[in-house]
Image (cartoon, rainbow, N blue to C red; front, side):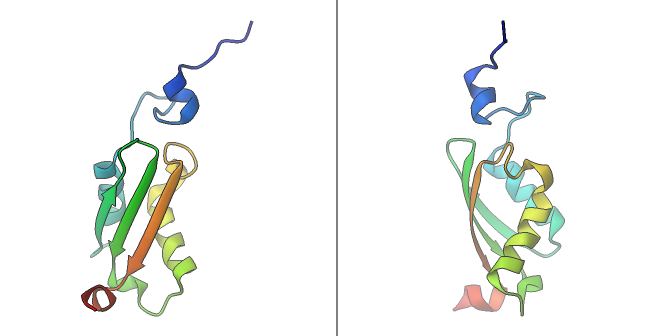
Length: 97
């Protein structure tokens, strides 16, 4: 007989190791991975998040490249512990407008 994972583990809310991901964790990872960045991350269900990331390193880059930069800071958590992340990525000049 196959053993089933608890519901939270099946849905990705809890990583196999038992670690949980929350908005504060994502904010820290983004800000550490993109020096000078400021991130505002929200997400109440533990798997779906929204983030606004302000970083001058985004200057001159298309939205897809900016998103890839953010995803790189999260590593394997994207698609695993983090099921969905809606991103708004802007430079400080764009944020001031």
